[in-house]
Amino acid sequence: MPDASRRHRWPGQDVGSKRAVAVLDAVRAQWRPVVLPVLVLWVLAAVVSTTLLHPFDVHEYERYAHAALQRPFFHRLPLEYPAPALAVFLVPLLLPVSYPWAFAVVAGIALVALATSYGRSEMPGWDTRAAGRLVIYLSLGSVMVVAGRYDIFAVAAAFWAVRAARDERWSVAWTWASVGFLLKLFPAALWPVLFIAEWRRLGRVPWRRFWWVGASAVVVAGIPALVDPGGTLNALHYYLRRPAEIGSIPAGLSFLVDAHGTTWVGSFHSANVVNTWAGPISVGIEIAGMVGCLGTWWAQARDRLTLEAACLATLSFVVLGSKVLSVQYLIWLMPFWALYRLRVSWLLASAANLVVFPYSSAATGFGYVPTRGFAVSLTVAFLARDVLVAAGTAAWMREQVRRRTPTAGSGEPEGGAPSDSRTAVPVRV
Image (cartoon, rainbow, N blue to C red; front, side, top):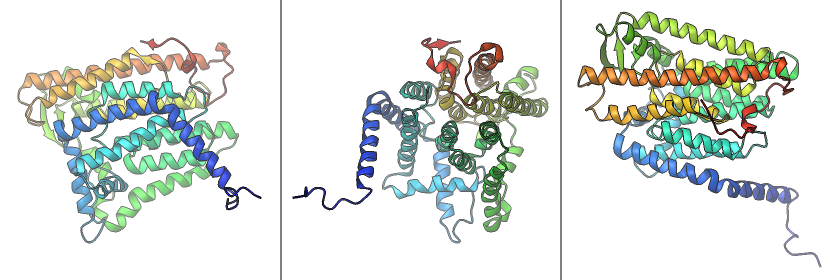
């Protein structure tokens, strides 16, 4: 007599059961080394964000979400964010708690998904140790913003794009990169990296990927043009009109050049540095950042940088070359930092990122700078953070290029795992 438990099985039921068991086993394997630390980090971040800092950004997201739901629907678009970011802003409205807490919950889900995606990979160097390094960087440098900004969603999409490309799932990689671009724009910088990597791996130019680029541009600019023609390029216009934000390299350098002629103004939801040198230095730094990106892509095309290294270098030049470098922008880099050994310079930069936040929050508010001494010290602290990021990235990049030179004899194929992920040395300067 057949086993009663098997009489009503569907053809794919055994396969589905095996997959479910595999997922559960993966969750159990990551629970203590990854999931539990991430949950502790999220609790701290949620409490800091919702009860101590009362972030302006989250309330701004809430206003945008409610404005989009007014009739006619979706005709009021965000001023400083791409229109598709409304998808993220609307989700917290579905939860039966206050918007800041609901947003923190949604951000926490993205954070857990990001951290556990390291351990679900079978690629060398993408493991629970890398996830642990991510938790260290986020805890040290971004605990105050990781649950109070929506950058984590775009960062996760960018990271998953690189992960898919590393696994040679090219269409998935381009899809995730496009999703990240729709949310925050900056993942578009990874498109050339993916293009070069796919070209090198397949031996032919992947021209069809321009369809991903074109479709993403249509969604970001074309659809808003239909519902709100005046807000088609809101995010771009918002950036171009902004002065040098206090946390950027142009702000710090222009202050050093013209300390006596520098003033600080509250505008564009941040504190900004204004002097005669800020504009020209901003243009110079942006050009330097673009040159750095081009050099990175050239090195990748010549097999001097791996896929992961090219992505981290590109995003580093984007962050450091911008005239806006808010505290949450380090989150863009941290998932890729975690693929390599802990570096003292990056740890110190994370610590500086954390220190300036309670220091600035101790004032009555931004734009609002109570004394010139406070503004000066904050500008210098941010500049020190940026220099640490730049110095650490420069030293790391030299190591990566040196390892990929023909004389190194590593024999590692393009797109291979970061070579220093297999070394026992825990920390490098």
